[in-house]
Image (cartoon, rainbow over all chains, first blue to last red; front, side):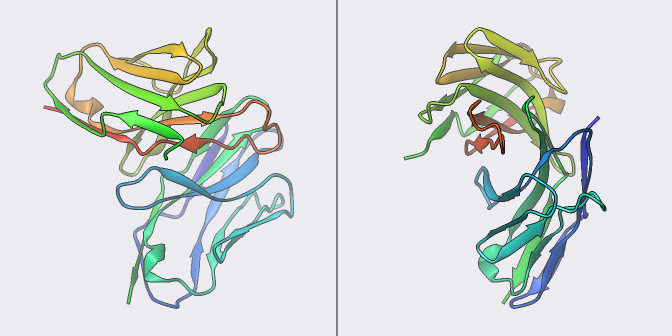
Length: 112
Length: 115
């Protein structure tokens, strides 16, 4: 079945550091890929998304590229801020059947 | 105003008690979902509903039941709560017309503790 594996945390960075959170997936067909973010005490919010190979999703300085050849969707940001501290979830959705699978989540803490 | 609301936001209950978590949405979406979140396990799907007359089991439905009272309301019940059902519960919605992305929209969560 479909599954998502993402980098275990926690990840602690200093402000303005470069961020990478790795995500790989296993799926039949052509899934859509997502990164969701969960700020403390809140629900999940969509951060970015991509629907086909080589698509790049971007939002708030974060980027991720849909790599079909490596079945990956790594999240990157060039310069993190304290306000980026949150839990990040990689997810995939099998187009057509609404079956969304989430990774375990990666907690990011950014220190000033 | 929140598009997806959940009540209660926090609940502490005892083993064996029946408890209901409620979800309402104003997004006009037809599809609704219940997930639980446990540390290190991400979100796991409990039940989902594609319209008012459609209910489907998810990955971990044992010990839970649901009711879709209207397009905008989807409740989750624990008939006899047990301590390993202590978790953070999320409701989500999606629109069947979003065939490209199939994006889901989440409520703020309900933190349930079973003693």
